[in-house]
Structures are given as structure tokens and as C-alpha cells.
Amino acid sequence: MSRWELNAARIGDNSLRASYTLCRRLNAAHGKTYYLATLLLPPAKRPHVHALYGFARYADEIVDDLDTNPSEAIRADRLAAFTARVSTDLAAGHSAHPIVRALIHTMGTWEIPPGYVESFLASMRMDLTIAGYATYDALMEYVYGSAEVVGLQMLPILEHPGIPREQAEPFARNLGVGFQLANFIRDVGEDLRRGRVYLPQEDLDSFGVERSRLARGVVDAPIRRLLRFEIDRARSVLDAARPGIELLHPASRDCVRTAFVLYGGILGEIERRDYQVLTQRVSVGTPRRAAVALPALVRACLARTRFS
Image (cartoon, rainbow, N blue to C red; front, side):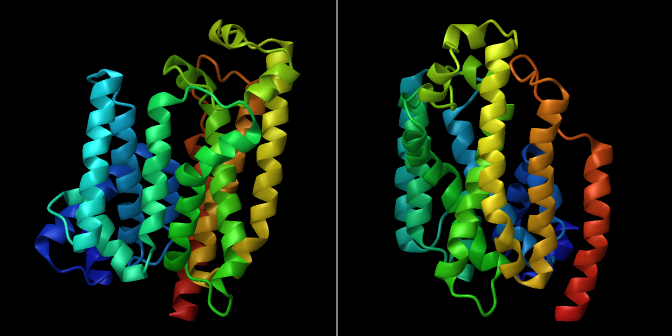
């Protein structure tokens, strides 16, 4: 499948093919919902989405290295070195680093602005020093780099024929924010064990929830009310993003629609499990994923045939 996708994308250089293959493996291993949705895109576009995901995952692993658990200073040094390398290689237009090599090729192919990468890495640096955010607006400064720019990077790959970029961008940004908020809610317990809370402090204060209360791992009434509030806000952001799906190229819509439904499904699954996100990771089960993805795959194939 990977070889077929690389051939469809006209990626012939062996080192570049190896780079894209590595990115694809990272996507398949760590971003199951994202990866499943990507399979609904035309084959020629999939390697480029894998490249964007692979880069983001690689940088995130530097910040959250749970295997060797290096000190904060070591993680900071590693991220600074990687950031410097990315900046230098972007300016040069090529890289010996396998992940960055695929990223640069994708950015050149789709004319993705370098500023998006710089903003993403800036948010990764914030993760090294910031353990919480006082307000929703403060959190959104982090989310711009960690999520909004991901949606903006995806726009040229997904294509929006006949629609000016500035008209499509707000929907892409909202989609990135909505997905990120869903992740924040799902990962409250996991993030807390890393020393971080991505729920705004003003929200915790409003519902009478202290960090120490979250750390106990027991979902009580105040925590339920807090999480219900966060889910409602995430859904409102996703609802604002929904109209943008119809602005995309017909062959891209089912990919984004599937991701939209599955990320919304995470929120529904959290509710179904009585908000038990402090001691377990909630996910959408395989039967539900299949029920969403299989009909979408049929529609996507028909769209590719019709609009190719």
C-alpha cells in the first residue's frame, strides 16, 4: 500500500521514499483516528499527510519522552537542536534528517508557509515550561501552534477549488482547535501525570476543582460538571468547523468528515463512560470506527472516480 501511494504521488527518490515510509509508520502507530481518515484521501495525497503527522509526532516525542524520561534540561536542549536543524534545512530546501526531508518535500509540493512549522515548534517549547493556562484565551495561544496551524497546513493538500484561501481558513482553524480540545478532555489524567493541565484554570475555579482533586483520580460531581462544560465547548467549536467540509474538494470531504465524526465520537464515549478520563484513556472502539469508515470509503472511491 505504501509503495502504491508513493508511486501515485510520483515520489521516486529512494531516500525520500524511505522518509515518507517512516512518517507513515509513525502515523499508523500513534494516530489511529487520523491515520484511518487519511486512508480515505486519494493515494497521491496520503504520503504528504503522513509527512505532516510524522514531523509533529517526532517533535512531540522529544518533549514527552516517556521511555528514557530525560530531564527537562535535556529535553529542552534536544528540542532546541531539532528546531535549529529544521530552520536551517527549511532555508536550504533539503535535509539529511529523514523526518525533516519528507516535511520539506511536502511543504515545497503544496507551498506550505514555513511560519506554520515555526509556530508549531514554539508551542512544543511551551510544553517544556508551562504546566497550565490561566484562561481559555491563554490556552488558545498554545493551541494556535499545536493545532490550528495543522489545519492550515492541511488546507492546500485537501484543496478547496473555487474558494479563496481566506474563506476556508477559519473552518480549518476551528477543526484543528476542536480536535485538540477533544484530545485535552480525553487525556486529562495522562497529561496530569506529565505535570500539565490543559483545562483553563478559570474553568477549574468556576467548578471548584483543584489540581489535587483531579490527581486523586476520582470523578465526582464537580469534575463531571467541569468536563461536561469542556465537552460542550469542544462541540461548539466543531460545529463551527462543520460547514467548511463542504468547501473542500469532493475527494477530500470524506476524509475530513470521518475524522470529524470520530473525534466527536470521543466526546460521546467520554459521556457514555461517565467522564472516567482520570485513570483511563477513552477511545472509540473498532466496530464504531469501521461503521463510520467503511461507508465513507465507498463514497470516497466514488468521488475519486467522478472527479479524477
